[in-house]
Length: 103
Image (cartoon, rainbow, N blue to C red):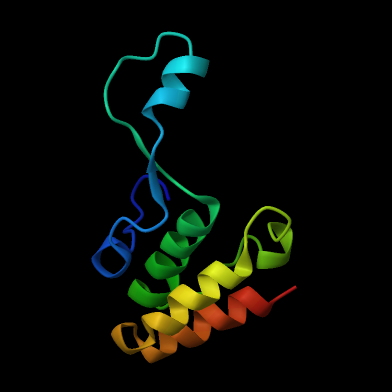
C-alpha cells in the first residue's frame, strides 16, 4: 500500500498480492528480471485501512471510498473485514466500516 504503511499480511497473508514481474518487464523500459509483488486495488485499500484504522486508530481523512468505488470492489473488502473482525481492534473495525460507507 505504500512506503511507511504497515500492511495486513499478518491477517491476510498473500491474498490480493500478485507477481507483477512479467508485466513490468514487458511494459517498463529498463526493468530488471527479478520478482516484484504488487497488490490489487482492494488489497492496497485494505492495507491502508489496516494501517490507519486498526493500528493507528485514526480515520482516513483525505478521500472517501466513494472517490475510488469505480475501480475498487467494496464486497471484497467487506468480506475481509468480516472474516477477520475478531482479530481486528473493535474501534478500528468501526472506523473501517465508517470510512467504507462515507460518501
